[in-house]
Amino acid sequence: MPDMNKRGLPAYAYAMSRYTQRVVRVVRGENTLFGISVQGTVDVLNEAAGVTRAQAAAMYGGAVCGWDSPMADPKNYDEVGFYIGPATEVKDGD
Image (tube, rainbow, N blue to C red):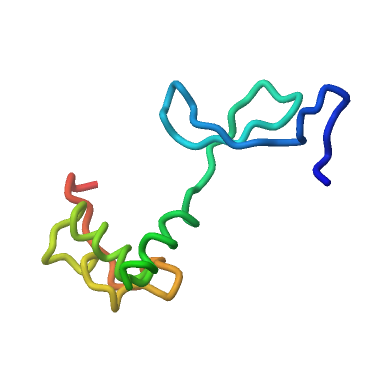
């Protein structure tokens, strides 16, 4: 059974922030909304489509960095979707 207080509130719950429209974790007694990763949902959707984390990361890399960039190649990502390929230049020259 979840940790409930006398009023029947659980130790934490998840909600949509009305300010950011993102999923947040609300901890009982805290005055802060904690943003969370929704990687689990992304994984479920991609698995249903037959897409690996490396492929999803490469798709994101292609959309953000260009489809001819090394960021758009799934071979440049490990099994959890972290980039392990060659260093890339920052477009703004920094």
